[in-house]
Amino acid sequence: MEDVARNNCTFLQMIDPKARCEIVPSPQAAKDSLARHIPDLLVVDLMLDEKGEIDQKTSGVAFLHYVLCHHPHLNVLIYSTNPELAKQLSLNIEKHKGGFSIVDKMELRTAFIAGASTALLGEKRTPDSFVDAAY
Image (cartoon, rainbow, N blue to C red):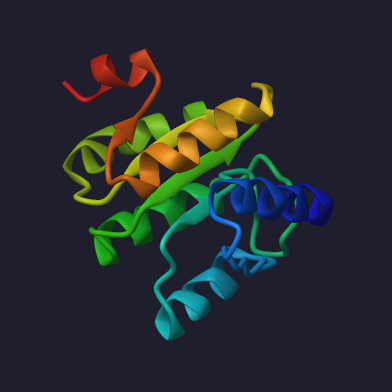
């Protein structure tokens, strides 16, 4: 799990060599971190539970909902093995003013880089299935 996060940092540094990463173990730790500092890009795994372990629980989705409500201009990259969990928030995602991308972890790392770049530019990139869910 932490290896994936460290690899994500390496790939973010391909976009910007000066990129600094903070890896947080749980949604609550992420909220605490956001209270101290707003990053240029927030990478979220929807499958994380409060213990920081991969789980089928929806606490990662609850965290995303928190971000969308409390940080409307934050650039967000969802990078998860089950990105469809975000579909339930499609209306909130559509209204989000910051950049927003969704990338499945099963895609190539080039998709991660493209998703991060899109979000950092303030643009949106979501799967086609999300368009239908928003209406």
